[in-house]
Length: 122
Image 1 (spheres, rainbow, N blue to C red):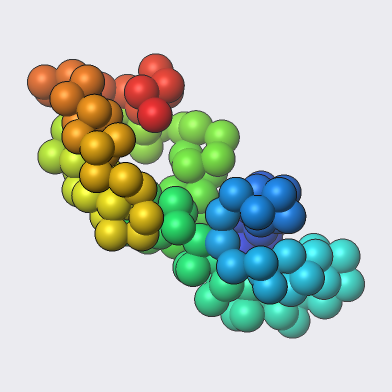
Image 2: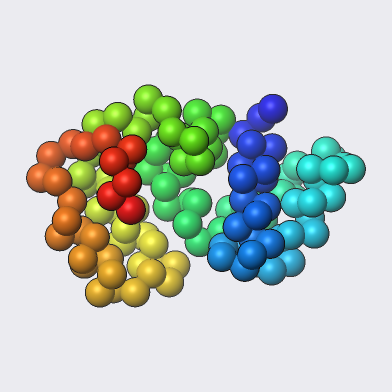
């Protein structure tokens, strides 16, 4: 399984429930996962439109397997995550629709140094 398939498998449900990503993504992701692996480029383009994914992916190292795994399941990339990168992610989420007052509350509660994201801060 590659990064696109792993991300598609987890993102399908959030998209189907209309929590994240364009509504039109559900059909493309479903077709890719069940019938047509040739849709990989289309699915990656679609996933890049999901509001929450790309700010994290860009700060964690791009759209690769380890980053996708860290985002959805957790791995060593989440250990000792720098505060300044988390602030950048939160600010990018504001640009994608997160209300500013929520971002400010989250940033206020961040530890003052590196921290493991596995603690459930978000």
